[in-house]
Image (cartoon, rainbow, N blue to C red; front, side):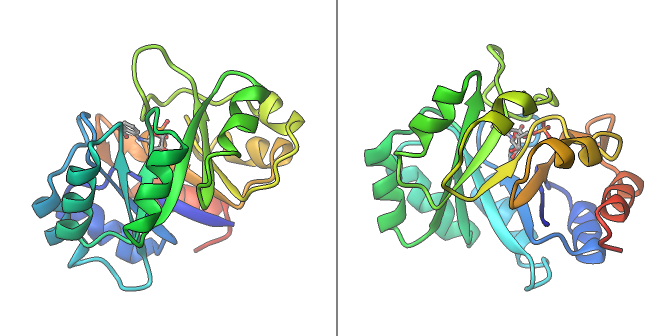
Length: 203
Ligand SMILES: O=C(O)c1ccccc1N[C@@H]1O[C@H](COP(=O)(O)O)[C@@H](O)[C@H]1O
């Protein structure tokens, strides 16, 4: 099971990542309490263990600024978490990055449509009217389980150490993406990261 820890923004968060070695570390460039700039991300990624791949989270970012931020920060993967279409995904791939497309799942049709966008991987998240992501709200695992997915996907949305085992009984993702579930009072919490990695047998 692959693991992405998302929303890293402090040196302490990088220390935790280097200690527990998730496969991916996520940096949020969209408007969010977790938002970092390209330069801040570059400094953090510079301290990240080289075995961990860096993922940039973007929401409807103009392509030129996507390119600039990805270059400055030194990202490996672009996670598109907004309303980006197939043409946008194609342009992002032309920049030479692996591209993930987030789907805010309301129905099986949302997932089917996302499978036509040409992304390398889908990230299935919960739907919220208030925000594009990072809401801590659980995705509808029953809807996801009913869809025949032909593409690799990560499960996201409100995952924590108490619910990931149930999630994995219902859905069979390639990986899990966790942000709010490893925070206390808005900051990454080492004990929660350790607990999740323990449940996943990664200690
Ligand atoms: O984390 C954010 O603030 C964020 C903002 C805008 C778009 C996506 C964001 N994060 C992504 O949201 C999901 C789920 O997060 P959570 O575990 O429910 O808190 C995850 O894919 C993050 O990468």
